[in-house]
Length: 323
Image 1 (cartoon, rainbow, N blue to C red):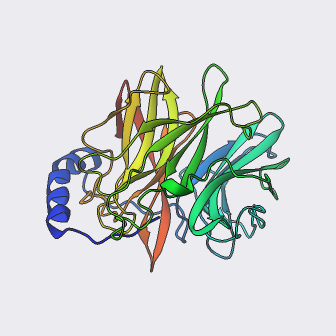
Image 2: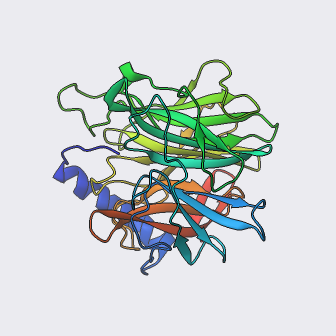
């Protein structure tokens, strides 16, 4: 969700080093979008509460809606249909109502909880992350009166998603948006940590203070963002993206740990890099399906748009690969 000037040398080096990995793992074939419209930062849920069950996807503001929603009747691979429905027409009293980003929906008890980021009235250059609830997965959702976190001094907060551990404890992960301008040329480099916040059983009440689980490092450019946390066979896996979303260097990376609070070890190489054989430009904003067998993400498409893609994945210990 940010901008920066690019280094041509870095672009070249990153593309070259990524090629052997992507050629080996992906094969030389195109990967078409499963939803060919502007649908950034996709998140998915299979809702058993919908008659017959429903595969649903949610996305950043676009196509005239604050929170977009699409539905598939044939699994994660689609076809997907964009619904003419806004899940969150009012993002909350703390929000300006603008720039609603990266929604994520979780079923918690008899309620559905929608996590999202929105521009805050306290500082219109920044975002806070918040939550909203509904009795129906398709809403409309009612926003909570206060955000979950703003961290305005550090740059704001974005890209929140939920997670329920095998012991029943609930959490959210999100990003401190220190480099919201993709480099902050007037302020110098800023930290962009991924934060873990424990939540009460209702999914909307915080317990204690957040914990930093990861931050940018060499090769990540000005930032990391878009965290999504899953657990497979005792291993915690946090997917994230590095670099600016429109830089040509955006990617899908991941890190693993045996404890939810870390330490997390970044995988090398990343899962999907620039120069990939699928021909995707700026792939990122990924979320795994709850069973850890698939990944939705966006990539550049059409004109100034980002379309949703899906691909099966395989997780073996700490290694994630596309299949």
